[in-house]
Length: 219
Length: 247
Image (cartoon, rainbow over all chains, first blue to last red; front, side, top):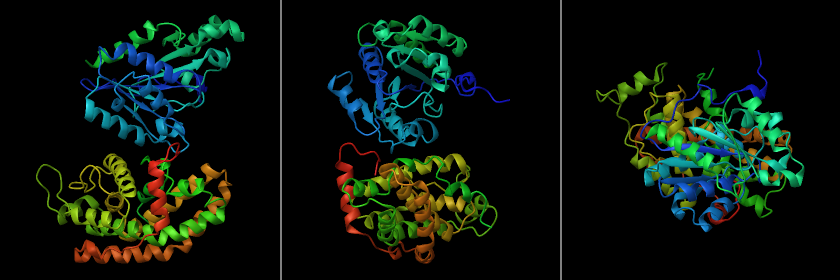
């Protein structure tokens, strides 16, 4: 029997737990403009003093995200690497993760980090990471992108280990019902966590704690 | 009938990182040098018999160095290169072949691209053909050598290795042209098919040269040819901002 896409559970048993003693790799995906880079920056600012962190970015056609992170000085510049994905950001995180694996392995060899964040290029609701590349994945959506997105589900919304509904502060301005988004997300996510946040305007302790918990598993 | 596992090596879906490379055509497209399917065919007519020949010959040589001519590549590789007792096999001395490819790849940017893709393919080969004779290739060998080793491990011949090298060069260029220029993918499938036929003699020439060089254990016998403009464009590409492809 075929499953509906939003019933697929990417986190269910098909992949290994993060390996003890190895850097935990967390993929951060989501549509263009949803706030992936802002989330990476926020996580780095909070966690850099307690963990050794490195970042791989997958811009579609520039190194802008990596440049932004370096300019913001969220980490030492050499801990942030950009890879080119040949017009296919979802291929590079799922079907053929070679370029990203190379980048992660180089960072691991050089810095022996506790945590590697892999930020995908902005893509669509079906773009998810292969667990051959990452251990856990966060999917980010934008409140202003439509409050029906959680209801529609899809592999990212339904299957990610953590769903982040970002820019909730914009809800009243764009007529988005964030309570409904949370309820719809809970319905398709089968108990996996969802965080409603506004990354640029407020702290994100729940996401930071979730990331800490993933790292603790392997400590 | 080719060895069944060779189909895997011919498949662009095999995860070896090739999708992020354009075979050099992105740099030409950005400068308006390539705009239509005929231009892609012309680009290939310049590149396949030159840089393509060198790569294909090196792949054929690597395959010939391990050529088993039998059904059990692992056993025959072990026969030719005795087992070390820890389960690994020794292999040919790859250093002269590695150096010969470097010497035939004029610009550093393309030597780096070859090693990046070799590293990636090595990872895939280790997963798909654990018995492959990769010992001694190091961590960043030239891609042509890994392709030749993989072809031998999959039960293929030096001609298969040369054919695969040309097929992937053509495929990389054609698929990148579709993505970069919005060309009709059906038209590019035609370009790909015609290029494989037109450059069949290149495959034969590369296989002969590679087999001869391997038989004589003389890496210097590998052919030498290139086209200057794509080499220069590759340097500019490596320095450019905003490129979609890694090369």
